[in-house]
Amino acid sequence: MRLLTSLAGALALVSHAHAHGDHAHQAAPSVAADASWAERHMAEEHHISAFDAGSFFNLHDYDSSNEWTKDDLLKTYGLKDPSTAHISDAEKSAAIDRVINTFDRDRSGTVSFAEFTMGDAQGLKLPDLGYGPGHHGDDEYEYEIHHFEKYHGEDTTEEDLIHPEDIEHFRHHEEMEMAQERQERLDKMSIVEANIPSKFRKEL
Image (cartoon, rainbow, N blue to C red):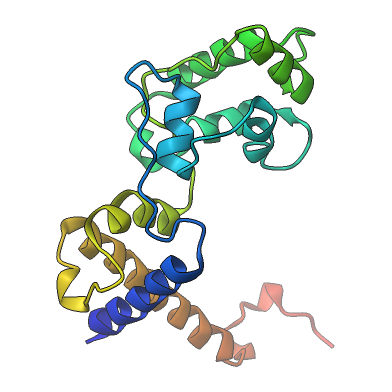
């Protein structure tokens, strides 16, 4: 019963997101076979086909620091996503070093807005590291953009959500809901002083 409630609630949320969100039933723009990694990333992950280097940089400058750190680039390339857990940290680090070395003129270990936009103007491109389009949204975003939009629509009913991706998505929601309920129950419990070991009790 809880799973059905979770499914119904999540379906309502996804429908609401489709009605009011950035991706309301927009198909990912098609890209040419010879498109750059950045063009494929923007089409598949953001449903954006027209952008410049500055807007790409700012969209992926997650802390608005005006520079891409190794952490920013790991996220942009999807190397923090669970789907890349099979790639070793050493491989990920080497791949991101390659990106940084392409643009980092002052050898600071980061890529500034100026370095990226000037490099782009001179023909430098973000390399395709071979790890996919760069999944860097949260679970809800990734489910919506890569599954719900592809296989479901505004008229989707609870009975339609039968794909393995749907089941896994809502199972995850149910686990989070149960964990939250458990924590709320614990938070409401009063502290029983007798259960506190004496060495941690302050004698008044």
